[in-house]
Amino acid sequence: MHSPEERAIEARGLANAIDLDVLDTLIVQVSTPRPATLLGSGKVEELRELIKTAGAGLVVVDHSISPVQQRNLERAWNVKVLDRTGLILEIFGARARTREGRLQVELAHLSYQKGRLVRAWTHLERQRGAGGGASFLGGPGEAQLELDRRMLQNRIDAIRRELNHVVKTRELHRRGRRKVPYPVVAIVGYTNAGKSTLFNHVTGSSVLARDQVFATLDPTMREVRLASGRRIILSDTVGFISDLPTTLVAAFRATLEEVVEADLILHVRDISHPESELQSQDVERVLAELDIDLTPADRHILEVWNKIDLLSPDEREAAEVAARWKERRPVAVSSKTGEGIDELLRAIDERLGIDDTYLTLVIPASEGKLLSWLYENAEIIERDVNDNGETTLRLRIAAEKRGRLLAQLQHLQLRIQ
Image 1: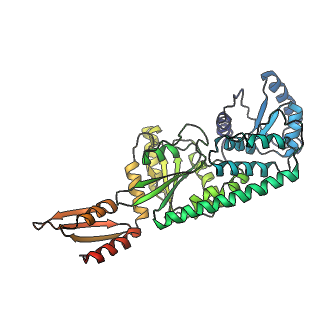
Image 2: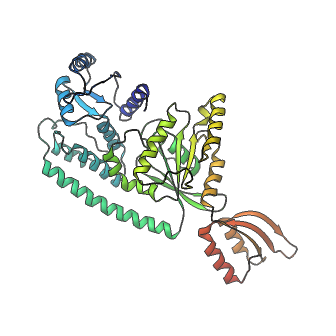
Image 3: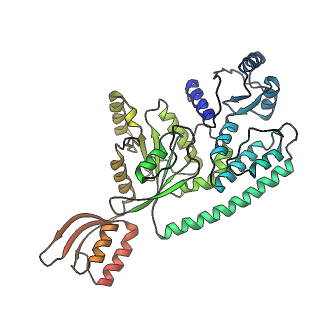
């Protein structure tokens, strides 16, 4: 279980992620949750005075609260109250950029609100037409109208139909990639583990990478060429977090299909974080919900220990010892300095290359086009040119390209040595 102090730090980070001005953070021990208000009456009154003195307009409770608890706390404190799920939905609403992302956020939010006494359906409807990220903190019309349950369900059904269409479109794109075919390597990890920085370092891209939770929401893909000549599609996905709302896991399942369908998953961990192991368990819990095999022997997952540049010499030595004892051997990197990136790329190549073929070919001097193709699509291990201009190559070629090479050799009537 995450410590209260770390949860408080994370909660502030969540609030800061949507530019909320955090006036104070309090850790409140609750021995017996009250059905009406979660907190005891004395604590509710104490907090009412603090909220009034601070002049706060919003209180975030880093816990799941029921509709009744939310309503009663709002009445007692005379401010808007958000629980952890509501806050995370706010962040996702602010960060979604693609049409699919916005639809998924709206679906998750409406599913969350179903059964809650939240006002202003028409206000939310107006915000949808505004173009940018969705926001659910309310506005001028919020206190005026009761959420129309029938309209809510109709909108949920409409979003699901739209998402089904989007999923079908992405499946067509996925089929197109399978025909290439390039292996897909998906990056997953706890939010703020450095996934996007790693993605940028490997691909040379400029995907948004900030010291901020959920900086990346919509998946981003780029092509990367490995030493063996293998081309892969690297996918940067949304970060996970402890107690990730089930409504979000369900709504974003379509996006996370990129993870489910991946040939290899890179589980990026912030190894410098004091609760790195607990964060890892949170990520694995979500992966398990996606029916991904997490057995140590599974070659489907490669653990990446990021931010080693932030470790002291003693901490680094301890991490190296711990790595040697892990059944699924991790790769230590710094996505900021680039340390360990080459080793990571080799590890990816090896994992994807278990079925690769090693060949020896003699290429006549007249077959410069084939020679060029081999340099582009295979890893050349040894090369020798004789007096006749013939080139002898010892090479490694990916399983997915072997058929194309054999077809070229047959057409040119060349034989494998």
